[in-house]
Image (cartoon, rainbow, N blue to C red):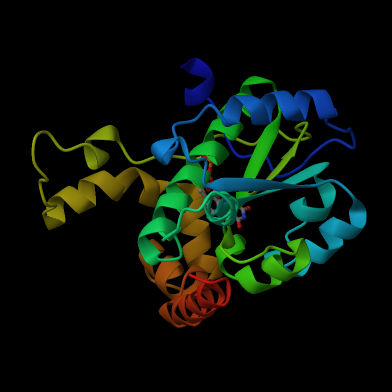
Length: 244
Ligand SMILES: Cc1cc2nc3c(=O)[nH]c(=O)nc-3n(C[C@H](O)[C@H](O)[C@H](O)COP(=O)(O)O)c2cc1C
């Protein structure tokens, strides 16, 4: 439990490989995660070679971890393999819909996070790349994903070459509700976000971006409605193109 409590994202890695044995061991442990109906609705694409990383880099807005990490893992929703099995066994699959897309996403993310827990336990550092769902079509093309396979999470993995301080979290009472959901009063929000708003780096963010509040840095700079709507459209189109 202590290693989970002290974990943090690592974005800089040593120029040192991860052996096939270790990687396979971690992936095998990850595949022990719970999975809907024991159907294992996921695939993991391992990118180790430089050309492969260069092909993925633009989709991830050239975040340096993609080309600098020894291993990049793309976790995909995969309804293809199970559907193929059904078709070859005189069974008619009905898995090309939104419900199974979500179930595949849950399966794939459980494997991804279990992999991260195991990797961090082994001393490796990881970073999730949210850009996976910003530019899904370019990742689908780069990794040659067939129908009913869709990238949902990318993780860069390597031996840590940095030791950043651990980011803040909201207090547990902001997150956990006893018995039923208790909505937040304005005073609750003030209290629960006070620590985050008091941090020097967050005050600096507000100054640098010429904003009045930290929330505005999120809504107006980091994650805007306009960008999210364009990405939603691209996501929807890529889902349809993949047969969902
Ligand atoms: C869905 C998701 C997407 C993320 N995308 C990125 C990303 O594109 N680039 C990055 O540097 N970190 C990314 N991260 C890492 C978060 O920034 C990081 O987990 C968060 O700031 C908390 O820091 P910690 O993991 O060290 O506690 C992502 C994490 C998640 C779960």
